[in-house]
Length: 280
Image 1 (cartoon, helix red, strand yellow):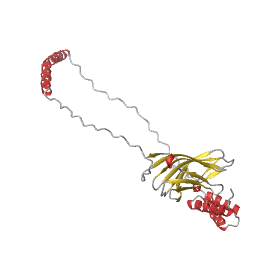
Image 2: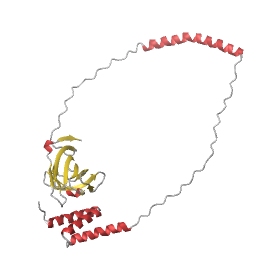
Image 3: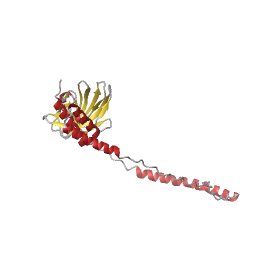
Image 4: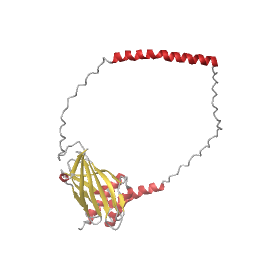
């Protein structure tokens, strides 16, 4: 498949301008340099490259002084004194006559308290016995209704999860679409990007476009490639996982297009009728 040089230059300039607006100046410079390789006299590419180099040179020229750590004052040593236990006052021991009197009174009190305890027990038993507990009334039972099986119709304003197995590739990269979650206004896609070429490639979220059932093309609004919110370099024979969010999405997702402007585009058809849906 042959590409039109003018079309490739326009795409690279568009990608460079989008990366410049997002603050990705290194990536914008790469796109402008690739455009100048195809069209050395293109003024827009030259102007964009000059702006990106100017901002990058300003950042590199501004030195960042490291903060000096403040000296830590040594802690003052305070001698610890052992805690002396308090001495309890010694209790006077009863004499032999007093011990004999207490022992005799204790036996008499123990014998005298037995009839009193028996009377208290009988009185309490007679008061508790007439109090019969009411028989609990059984609650009416209802037959549980069977839970209806989920239908395949789309219910908006609720997240729907759809597990897919769509795969597509060109001569350089292979895209595997694993999972898609969507509502009436937002769609999130989980995918793998596999480098099948002998050199390192750069996977950018700017290359992904979602096409819904109304035919509208939606660009990404947020992404996460292994903790990074922008593109990521993938070495030969390796892959990266990522999640891309598209907003707004009017209808149901139908196609995911990957087009980096350098190689043949990849089109993944999304068939929601053959996937498993789970309402969150």
